[in-house]
Image: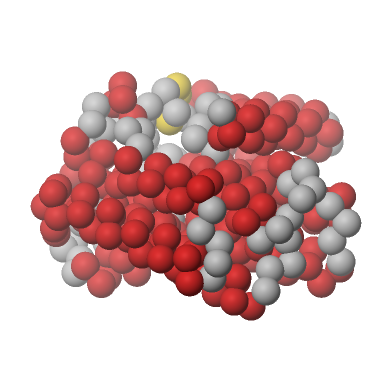
Length: 292
């Protein structure tokens, strides 16, 4: 019930953002952004923002701040699915953005969502009454996670790794950037918004790094073992694209064990920093137990 309420609050914040912020964009681009932002999703990254914020003592309504992180995640999905990238047709149980709105419009919409996220994060931090240095730190974290040192760089490494057999260290390097960067940034942003202590920030960093990698391992396992209907996206794409995966390197059982060990590592990091709340513990377990 806790997660359902938080997801509803984040969804409402995304609707409000679309209503306020898209009016000045070309109608086709605005429609594509709305389509990508408001589709059903787990909202894991916003939940992590909220969980970290509350664990560090935050008491305000941070749903709009959490929603700003979802904008970056949605942009990454739009671009990941493009024909020049992973070339996928299904996302969240419906046609991908470029299949519904056209490739050119989807590409532009994805680019437009990055400054939209930065503006949303800054506005939400201001509404929470955060000081200027914290507002700047939050936007910086979000943009770093979405850029060359994060998702963009990780996507390039991912493309370069197709039809190659990567070592485990290489694979973890790809996914620490492509997938893990925004997940880790989500908990850091929550901590910044709550004025976390250095000890708490270190704990959140360890937690975010561990569950970011665990999330990708679980994704690889699901891609190899689940159906398209179960996933809401095309199953078996990794094998089709010739990507190195954790099941290929470790076996399915080994990959599942590695993800579980990382979830335990994530909880240990929180325990060391005095932040092991039931919410964050459940989110760590959800990352490895999820079925889509």
